[in-house]
Length: 364
Ligand SMILES: [Ca+2]
Ligand SMILES: [Ca+2]
Image (tube, rainbow, N blue to C red; front, side, top):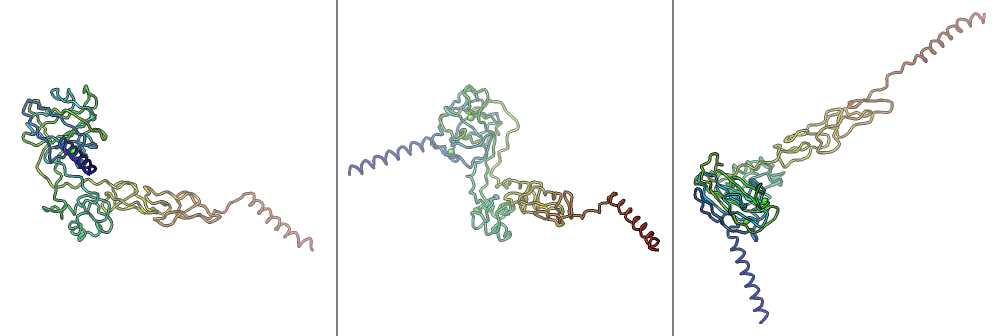
């Protein structure tokens, strides 16, 4: 009985601690960004903490990489230059932090969560994709996507076929990167961050305060407006469909159906010197590629030859024959003319002729 009460107390304390932790990071997710009121020429400070917050894995690189847990704030653009800072000298003098901060500023919508590894809407390197309906629609027109690999062509087909509302590629990742900063030079507290941007009047800016490495800590964020109209604001549009993700080109020595990853290495006997190619080139006669993934064919060494294209090796010349580097055949040695031998032959012939002529006489 006592044990049960003790257990209850432990559970209750645990729940309370959890509630407190969750409460302190109510702005852990972008959807729960804490709204800040910043009017033209003014500044607002807010105390926050990333301790107990989660990593915002869907937030794209923006001025700096997102590797540490972060929390979110939102502010409406004024048409002036705005600044978000954890540095005392960043804006109008109110930021600070007890750890190595980073700040990234996005606009439009919150970043979509990071896609799964078998995402339908981008090249994923495995056959098929995670949404069954989309997978079936794409593979019905392109069996490669289910038989071999879901490459960039499959992804573009998915964007065409699965972008209807409710489809696998319907959710646009509409977060637009505005700016970001890791360490602001000249800040009296090293490694603190200041990000300034020209704001578009009425646009929704989402400020992610995160950290270097995996660091978390407490900070005071100052968001200020310098009261001066600016030009050249990053365009903050509405939701746009997913842009086809940029797939990496195949490395030299490897190819794919569209020249983009995932790629397969060139087979033995073929090579590809350039990146982003679709086919490997068979080695020419007189050359070979002994390993797969070759970026160039090698010439046959002297003493070997290769008459055929697409070879993985060269053939040694027969004893007594020879070849130079890069040969397609071997040659027999040309007869060697020896003047000594020739002279001796002539002497012998003369001798035979001489004694041949003399013999009948002596016999006579
Ligand atoms: Ca977070
Ligand atoms: Ca920093």
